[in-house]
Picture (cartoon, rainbow, N blue to C red):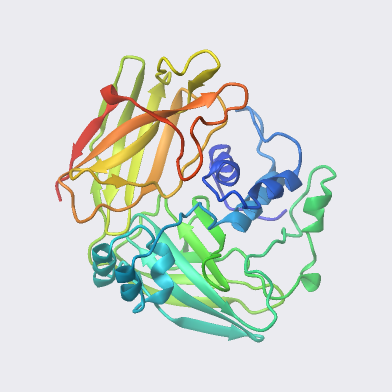
Amino acid sequence: MGHLPKQTEFAEMDAIEQMIRESSIPQKSMSHQIMNKIGENKLTRSSKQKPNLIKRTALVAAAAAVLGGGVIGSGFVSPAMAATLKQIPMIGVLFEGTSEEALQTAVKQGIVSEPNLSVTHDGITLKVASLLYDGTRLSVILQREGVNLPTVASPYIDKDTVIEGDNEYLKSKQIPEKDQVKGYIKWPTLLVNGKEVGKGQAMYGDEPRLDNAYIVEMTKDLNLPDQFELTIQANVTGVKETFEFKVPVKVEDKSLVLKPDASKSDGKFSYTVKQLELSPVSTRLVLDSKGEVPSSAEQTGDYSASMVYYELVDDKGNVLNPSKFDYFHSKPKTEYHVDQLYSPANGTPRSITIKPFTLTVKNKDWSVVGEGKGNVGDKTYLKELEMTIPVKP
């Protein structure tokens, strides 16, 4: 049986499904069509059920197919930023929503680099175009060169993976290697000082904002040193040799990590901030919540409250935008573990305020009131649950 990346039983499979179905993706995305092709069966599971192996594989493949359409985010690059990015052109997609000052700081500290390493096998060249590591996330962009190449990410399912049932769509993707179209990049492997980095918390796939580019983005539980050798191993369909790169990584000053273990409660609902990380390129919030979600007067009858979301605001009133926004079209759970990336603050703020809020949803179809045209929906802020965390570098 094919070996799939290890992931926490149901949570990670759910995360992949939610990333495809529920993330803020452009309306013309093919995500829903891809998901419908996977099968009509619902992907809900009880705690006693065993995850369906092939559905997980299909979800990962679908996630790769839609990656970049809104999961990593989109933004406007200012003329000043564009001028800065001329020095490191391939890195621009990793810094949307980031200030020029933050980018310059990241380059100076070694957080981002443009290794410009390339390997050629059988007429196809792969190049490590850009690399980012700030202690919070590890991102690599591979750029591919060759003649008459297909789209970048491989659509194929490993031939040793067992397909349950009669899913013709999945079977159509289980093509013998000798018959696969040449030129697709398979799921790469990353090693730090010779030890493989877990794939369970990673996103892989086409980077549509760049020609012939493939992105790997790891954002959770990295626990990597300030200095290490990164080995990137990638395989391409129709090519026997493995493309291997060794990149020295050295970060002068990683992200500022705060562990406040601070809680807020309204008597029924509470949350505890476990960790807050700040770097020149991102902000990360880790928290646990418990209890019944508070409801406003407008969230009764045919309407109800969504799960609780968290807005971050620095001491100057600047809102730090999430890298993605997930919609959960179901009744909120009573416990959540949130691990979310946001845009960076401009410099080191004196404090970060967490402003919990809910969205108003229609009970009949879980659609969000006010969603659309760049708006995630009508927000109901829970002022009694606001929390301000001082930042002490």
